[in-house]
Amino acid sequence: MPLLTDRFARTHRSLRISIVDKCDLRCTYCMPEEQHFLHRDKLMTRGEIRTLAALFVGEYGITKVRLTGGEPLMRPDVVEIVRDMAALPVKLGLSTNGMRLHLFAEKLKEAGLQHLNISLDTFDAERFRQLSRRDGHGRILANIEQALELGFHVKLNMVVMRGINDDELLRFVGLTQHRNVHVRFIEFMPFAGNKWGRERVYTYAEMLGRIGSVHAVEKLDDDPHSTAKAYRVKGWKGTFAVISTVTEPFCGSCDRLRLTAEGKMRNCLFAREETDLLTALRNGDDLAPLVQANVWAKHKMLGGLPAFQPDTQQEVLHGLSTRPMVSIGG
Ligand code: SAM
Ligand code: SF4
Image (cartoon, rainbow, N blue to C red; front, side):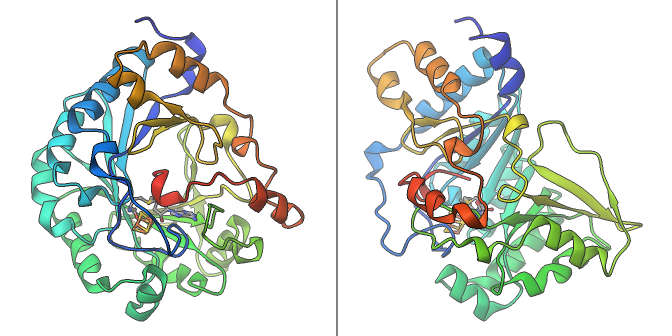
């Protein structure tokens, strides 16, 4: 099967594959209180994930794969899936909440995983309980340490929310002083059922202002397709970055495609339309026209939603996809 178009090959390099829609946490910004999970036979099998990933890599120019969820470490065959992905010529990463990392860390390393994104929104155990509606904060902190000791390239992802955890911003930046840690501050994004409000978004400009009022900060070069704007406190070992989806979206240079856990292809985090590749694969259909149509239908900005400004809040909330973040795969 030939490359769809040169444009496709140039502009879509990264594939996020959600391998399960379940999660052992219930973060308020990600999962509605009443969330129904897919039956196991609706999920892509290990073999189907391998087939679809190999197709995207071999035929459509994908060079980066990130496994995500839900919580990917909820899937019993995650190590085998990682081993399959590591056999492809891609930069491979996995996003996790870190809760079950101690059960898998060494095996994941041995299977070929090098890049781990671990979510951490707070250093306060009680705040963690409120945000994630579960216990386990101490376990996650210990597992982050273990990941660093094992030599994983670790990025810590913090969703910064006004009045919830923005007071911890500088403590997170402090992590980068002596250690080779990369902290990424994510603006709070709207998804179905997450009670988003524009006033809750602690903005990129506010983050830089707060950090810059205390530290001398230098801008680092960003990869042309990076969604994160990278910085370093001068002389410090690690780096920090901001993902400014709400106040400064980067749709023009975004090179990501997504597959949900039940094999639906999405061309944007905020897409309202998706393409059922798994059913087509199971039926033995030609996937090329489906993939092509999905890519060509991509909206210019934010999946066709209006800009996430205070005056468009109602329009944004009204226009959101019915999928919560937990079942999209961030
Ligand atoms: N369970 C894994 C985890 O927590 O890292 C992987 C899936 S999670 C959906 C992927 C990323 O999406 C996490 O870094 C999480 O913080 C982020 N995320 C979820 N909801 C978000 C929201 N409303 N705004 C910004 N980031 C969000
Ligand atoms: Fe689960 Fe990750 Fe969503 Fe939290 S952010 S509910 S850990 S999928």
